Amino acid sequence: MVVLASTVVLALVALQAAPSALVSPPTAQARTRSRQIDGARETTLALPHTLREGETAWLLVTVGAIGRDQIQIMTQDGQPLGTISAFGIRSGKAGGTYTVPVPAEAIRDGRLGLRLSVIQSGRAPRAPTAKEVKSLRLLIRQFKDGR
Image 1 (cartoon, rainbow, N blue to C red):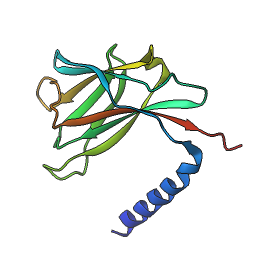
Image 2 (tube, rainbow, N blue to C red):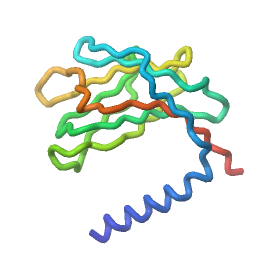
Image 3 (cartoon, helix red, strand yellow):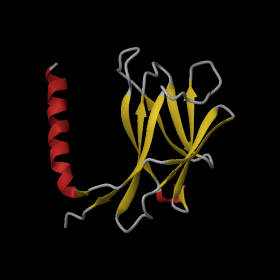
């Protein structure tokens, strides 16, 4: 319990220090298209503006109850962006919001095409339900140089 409390305190200190290094992030929430294909859900998100010098795009994925399943995130071209596994979350509880960095080369014409799949042990991948992947948001953050 002491180790956990120390970790939480360190995380809170890190979060309090971070805002001075960040500029308010614009957010893209509107999906331009969403469909299910071959065991995956394809979605396209639009950036609020093109990436500028020093800016990075981040995908925020809000996940519901997924148990031991995993959410695999790829671009529509098949480039892996990350996998969400709700480790340590009690069965039946929401998984929370996860942040996934998006490489600039994954963005084309101001849009990010995503392919989301649920990976289950011993089963073929399938498209996530609206209860499993509750929302997708694309944000842009600018990190100021500390020099």
